[in-house]
Image (cartoon, rainbow, N blue to C red; front, top):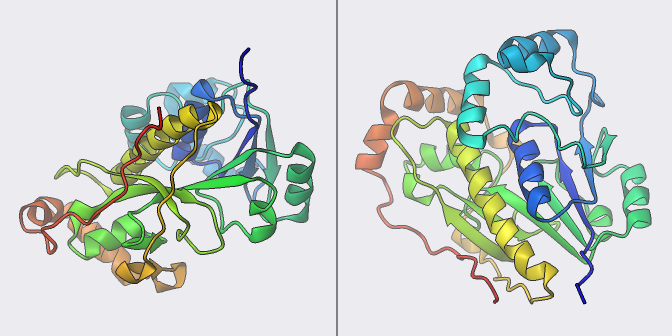
Length: 282
């Protein structure tokens, strides 16, 4: 007798890597519904629609279920190179609901009706306790190696710290502690001299999505997932209010002036900090 599939609901924004994340997981483990946090409620302003059409080129003529904003042809090319075609739109078979804020009472009511077994979050606003509590298990994909880099702009902070060996992704329990829940699995990515921050973050989504798929292979079979407690004293929590134009300009200079190549040759921290590698429970 086959085991009944557990109900998965994903929480995302309408951004290319998050759409890729959803489609990839859905192909292996069907997602019951996606809740898309979008302040425009699916209606891009006219100038953003124009930029997206120009960036998509021939793909702009295809009807899209979920409008994904693209800033330039260069970004569209990067998405396609690293994500294939799974970033362009949500799979037709995935139902989705738009909301202006992931913590809206209407979202809570929907989740309480749906009774998901698992929430998967990637890239939304900070999810509050009343949303997390609607499922027995909630996981988050975080661009950063927690606890060393928690919060926002973690790839950029690693670069500012001249620390390319500790750029990676973390899949952890979603809790009220920002990127501070128990860790399920982590991966580092290969950092190349020509990589931009955008390229690095796309690589992180690909790596983190694979961790989640491997974990769901076990979870759907009823195997116990193993989590590891973080020691927050080992790292930093960075918030949006700490980010500035000056820091952004430092990152821009790194990307334009061979800074990545120099950083890879002479990193400030030569060691790789310990991480949690996901191991199948088979």
